[in-house]
Amino acid sequence: MAADETAQRPSVSATKLRLRWLVIVVAVMAVLTAGWPLIDMAVTNQHPLAAGSRLTVGTSPSSGVVTVGPGWSLLSEQSSPMQGYLLQRGKLQLSIAHVGLLNREQLPQMWRGLMRIVSVSNPGIRFSKPAFVTTRHGLRAITSVVTGRGQIGTATIVRGPSGNFGIEMLALAPRGTSPALHAAAARVMVSLMFRGLGK
Image 1 (cartoon, rainbow, N blue to C red):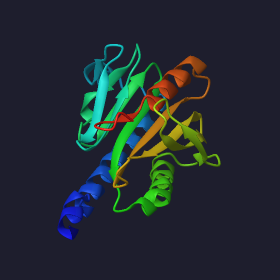
Image 2: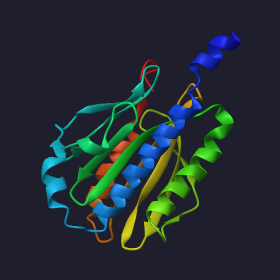
Image 3: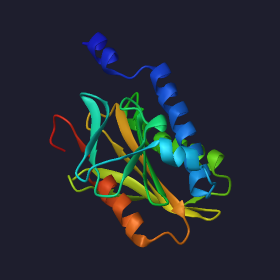
C-alpha cells in the first residue's frame, strides 16, 4: 500500500519543473500587462479559442478542467497541457497552472510560493488578505486581490480532491482595464472542475 501511495505522489523534480514554468509565465504576464509593444508575439503566439472550449491541465486523475467564454486566445508558446496555460482577452492575461503537492498540509506553502513568484516577477506587487470562496462546482478556493505598479487582478488557488495537487490561477491587467474583462476572467476561474469526480 505504501508503494502505491508513493507512486501517486508528484516527484520533486516534476514539481520544480512546473514551478519554473510558472515563473516564466508570470514574467511574460508582467511584460505584456506593462504594455510593452510585443507585436510579433501578439500576432504569432495567439490562437483564438471558441466560446465554450474546455482546457484540461494536468493528467488524469490529477487534472482540472476550465471552460472559457468568448474572446479568449491561447498563448501557445507559454502553454502546456501538462503544466498549464496562458490565456489572453484584450489587455488581460490569465495563467492557469498545475502544481504538485506532497500532502494536504502543503496548501498554505503553495499560497506563499505563488506570492513569492508573483512578487519576484512583478516588483512592488501586493496581495490582499486571502479569503475563501466557492467555485461554480462547489469547490473551496483561496483568493486574493493583486495590485501593483499599474496592474490589478486576482489570484486563486484550488486544491485537488486527492490533496496531491492544486490549480493556481492568476489574472492580471493594466489599471483602468474594463471591469467586464476582469469578470470574464473570474468566470473562467469559477468554472474549474476536476475530472472523474464531476467537481
